Image 1 (cartoon, rainbow, N blue to C red):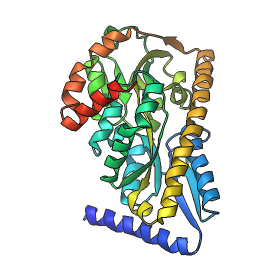
Image 2 (cartoon, rainbow, N blue to C red):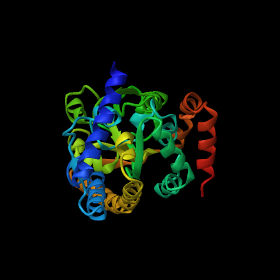
Image 3 (cartoon, helix red, strand yellow):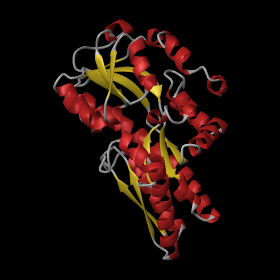
Image 4 (cartoon, rainbow, N blue to C red):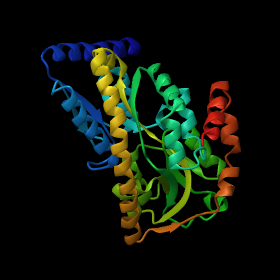
Length: 325
């Protein structure tokens, strides 16, 4: 019944889009867990501006920031079922649905953000986009989310030994759970919006994320120790319900794809500026930033790769990514 419900919902959205197109006005809803002004939110807003301009007002995009439509797990289901047309989320929550999404989530795979850009802007990125269509989604853009690092309320982390026994919130992804376990710590998947109170009350010791999230979610207020281990450089993904996309004319499909591509440069520019700004904010607020010895962290990831990179398609993807210069 759930399957038929999702199909029905998807066709309802498609029919609505088709009818409203005839009336020359269609408003598409897009969700984001981050606050207004955050680079991903602004990236999607810019996408919306391009869509409105290039379709001469036939399409508009309303961006619902700050998890107004639900946390990422909920909005992923909404966009897949057709209740929601657009969604900007992290790549990791798709790991159980789109196997190719596992690879960008692997720890210490990308050497730098520039390396990640080359991979995601090239044939490997196209391969991942194609895989998402099997899950009823069209990828319009891969956005920056920088590098993710651990932070906690109890002590500086300078080595893998310092991780032992600590409890960290992670994205709802088996890879992230196994990554934390491989470092001797305990992983607790939970919605992003629950992290602050959970650290504050001691339910968890800390979390892992980038500087802008550490800043804008105010996690630095309750977790002063930020360890710049940079375990993942995980791109964000901006997706559209495929049934809705398929109802667009070929000309409008090209407009949507090009607008997504054009929004990437804008988002990356905003992201780079936000990282610098956020680091300054948290340091001035008293956050203690340390850089651990990374090789120990890298060496500990062998069992994570052994468990999650067994499919020949994924093995080749990892090899191809490492070969990208």
